[in-house]
Image (cartoon, rainbow, N blue to C red):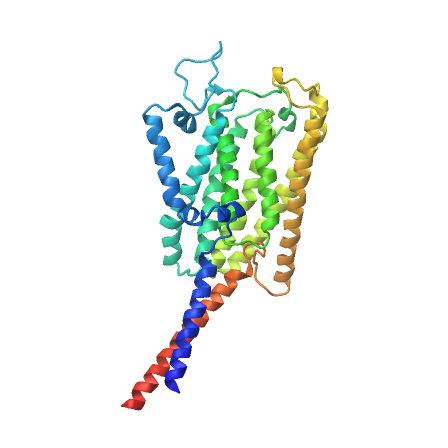
Amino acid sequence: MAKNTTRSTQKDSKAVSKRSSKKATAPVFPGFVKAFGLQKLFRDDRDMSIKMVGSILLGALLGNGVCRNMISLSYPVQDELTVEGEPWYTARFTKGRNDLYFVSFWIIAFTYIRIAIMKSFLSPLGKKLGIRGSKLERFEEQGYIIIYYIISWSCGMALMYNSPHWLNTDHYWIGYPHNKLSGAFKAYYLIQFGFWLQQFYVLNTDMKRKDYMAMLIHHFITSALIGFSYIAHLTRIGNAILIVMDVSDVFLAIPKMLKYQGYTTICDILFGLFVISWAYTRHYLFPIIIMSLYNGPQKFLDMEWAPEQNKYMSLNVQRGFLALLYGLEAVLCFWFLMIFKVIYKMFKGGAADDNRSHDEESEEEEVSAEVVEKLAVNGAAAKAAKAAKKA
């Protein structure tokens, strides 16, 4: 009887372990990845991305024009205001199709940078703090979000502080078209574009989220706004929107990381600060920016479509951008409703928990791990009993 129990225990343990492992490692691949059998390639994204980055850098070193365009800004301005020997970050640049090469490089680079930071720095840190299982993966993700958004928000704020549109929405439109950008501003904007395009890959290969569709819509609208605002020379208002959106994500990621370490009290306090920052930036400052787009163009611009003069702000373009911003605000309101559900749960005695994060599969994985451990203990006990009986 003990022998049968032991075999049954081992069999159940292996079955549960296999299911747990499958859930923990299997990403949600988009249809085209499955259709062409590219799952293995996308699982080995760190190897793939570093090889591609290395090849691009080598190509640029050897003088390949495409590779050079991928790692450096294109279209420097040469006119009477150009200063000889001026550093790239203060020099002025215009825009063109070659800018897509620069964006593509950063899509690839962010794939490597993200995994390198998560696995080489955040994973060892999480393990030292005693975090294991699916919580470790979430810890890595939130740590990367904190690092990226602090850098991007700081750069965006520095650029805005030294620009005419600092705390003045009228300067989104005064002097339009803003078709000549400093090297620093152009690099910031295109790198942000690359980051958000790369987020489509992250969304479809990471652990499945409960709000996958809302996140997909958010990424689509954000990427469309960055891309079209760059083409239409509306980068000042784009800069303001990116700053407004970046800051509250940091306030959300910090309490999440603390929760994975078991600090529930400070997590709840910081979650309160996150709610305040979210409400202020995304439902007060962001609508102010939307109202500027609604009222400002007619006040300062002739609203003519004249591409030969770099003028793209017509009435139809204004409506198109407003539709994207309204769509983004709708997604933000949906998430704010979910945040209120968390607040209600806290007042009922629960802990702060972002219920958008991941599907129930991650919880099942942790439960499965506990079941495996218990089954293993029971199996060991059965073996010990059998040995004692023989003795």
